[in-house]
Length: 211
Ligand SMILES: Nc1nc2c(ncn2[C@@H]2O[C@H](COP(=O)(O)OP(=O)(O)OP(=O)(O)O)[C@@H](O)[C@H]2O)c(=O)[nH]1
Ligand SMILES: [Mg+2]
Image (cartoon, rainbow, N blue to C red; front, side, top):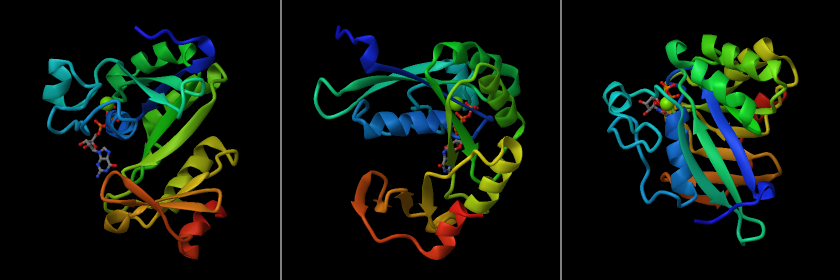
């Protein structure tokens, strides 16, 4: 079994309100990093970190699921990222609280329609209490009534102006076509897995960064 030195290890917890899409995001990360040959789905019981019978039957995480990806081109630069997929339902959110002290950072997953919800605030407070670095992913931007500007407003209202958008969606709802990476280098998503460069998104999308 491959041994990783501490410098090549990262531990990342995915936290957030129930149904925000944490388990689905982990499946997508594993697929994108070629750690899994197929894109696992919560809805058909194939999500990699929801493997317990009860989790599959209820289509929700009950305990923290662990998976990892290797990221980086060549061996000296390669890091192993341990992904800890925590449950978001109130009854099980103590699982998130337990893992936060042992991870390097948290990825707070937020629903692109609902914005900040009760458990989002709760897990944010857990991170705040232990001064844990965190990044936010606004997920489910393809759903009806998804709105990046509204979610950003809900995030800044809840967590302050320090919340800064680094990447913006291109379009929303059924017109969501990709994300713009905040360096004048733009990627657009075609199908589910292929990326290519495109021009900058229209001003209406860019306004999410300044509102
Ligand atoms: N339309 C849409 N649906 C999504 C997206 N991501 C996840 N879902 C769906 O949302 C539902 C909940 O997704 P999960 O990945 O189980 O959410 P979770 O945050 O892990 O939920 P808990 O484990 O209960 O906290 C599932 O039906 C997913 O298929 C997305 O980007 N777009
Ligand atoms: Mg889950």
